[in-house]
Image 1 (spheres, rainbow, N blue to C red):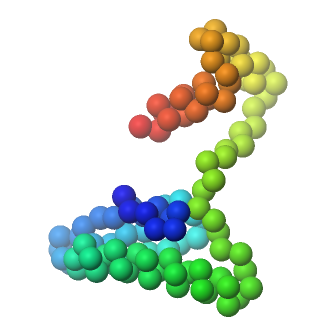
Image 2: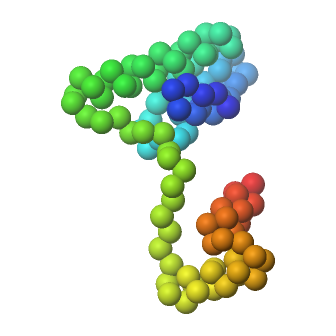
Length: 107
């Protein structure tokens, strides 16, 4: 995992092509980069993010910001009640309980 200006990227190595390639994962827009060495990869990542921000500015558009950590979930009233009651049973605030459940499920 790499980070630059709040953007996070996942990197893989392609043995057949002998190259690293990466993609920013915490934005809806597609930002990719590649390099043959770690230092080349780091520079390509930073350059890609800078290019993306410049491109957005030139077009007069707001860049898609890295995910904020806020997540809105819609539940039925019955589901909402069950979630609140489950959190209360273990003595936790519903936000903490939901966060822990989602993190555990995403492993």
